[in-house]
Length: 109
Image (cartoon, rainbow, N blue to C red; front, side):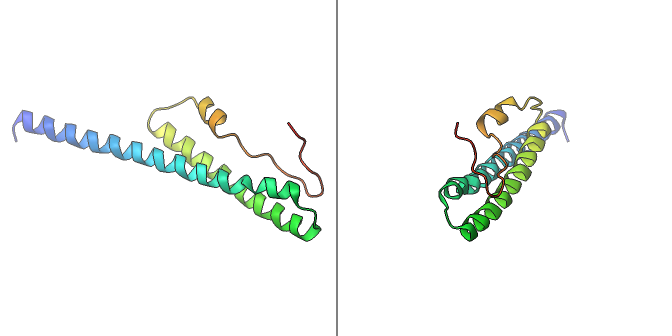
């Protein structure tokens, strides 16, 4: 194999790797967005007046909050894999849902 063909092959492989890293990063971001949307049940939780309904919604919220936390870690790992070391933008764009306590409503901001 000539030197130019070897160079071209390596360049194509590097391009495919970069594209796959970008796609994986995008998928990780989408999973985090979906998990955060599922945690939006917090609004329903605030409005619930029935104790059983509130308990069920609180459990749903905590599960969604846990999934969002896992998705956030996965996104940070993908960012690290592509060389992005500072994650302040993730904190700004995707804030962690607050922890809710049974029987207490969150403070209004």
